[in-house]
Image (cartoon, rainbow, N blue to C red):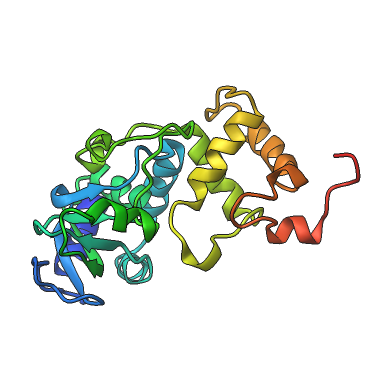
Amino acid sequence: MRVWMLLACVLSQGAWALAPCEKTSQVGSWCEVSIDQLHPTQGGVGQLQVDTTVAELADKSEKQLDKLMKKKEIPVVIAPDGGYWLVDRHHLTKALWQQGVKEARVKVIARLQDRASFWSQMQNNHWAWLKDERGQPLTPEQLPGHIRDLPDYPYRTLAGLLQDAGYFSKQDQVYFVEFAWASWLGQQMAWQPVNAANLAERLAEAKRLACNSKASALPGYPGKQCRLNPPRSGS
């Protein structure tokens, strides 16, 4: 727990101190906001990835933590009502919350003014993913209201690990690419359970699937690993 008291101090009082976020915060600026005020723009997270992030952060020094939080940009969109919508780094933000960190450093990437077109703009800019793990539609009202309430999407963990291993890329920094892969992987793998005990086995299967031409319609296909080690014909 002492490590996380240190982390909270680093994020709120470290060398990279920032002004509080406001409704009028400029696009492109960095500011500090309570995690309680960050609204998720996706339906869930890969909890195994969140837990891994928790363990990784716990091993870092004060200097390393400060450097990491400068590098790991947490982008937000400010809504017409002044609300802050988290458009990426949901896993990192939930990991911080789980360990008692209350404030996050964020970058304002947009301020939207039109209430009527807010959600259409969010989707057109790839700033929201209104589908569940299986690709079924979600309404904005069905999104969890707080980062702590994001449920586990096991296949999102699988997709995240697949991306980290180089089997698909995040094209042009478009957010939520991993969710398209998660839904596809689940369909291909008949939604078999994914957990810590079978993760290595499921990931090996996902790697084989990722290089198959059946995945060619997915964003980020083929990844570097597939180009370096193309699948054998008939796979």
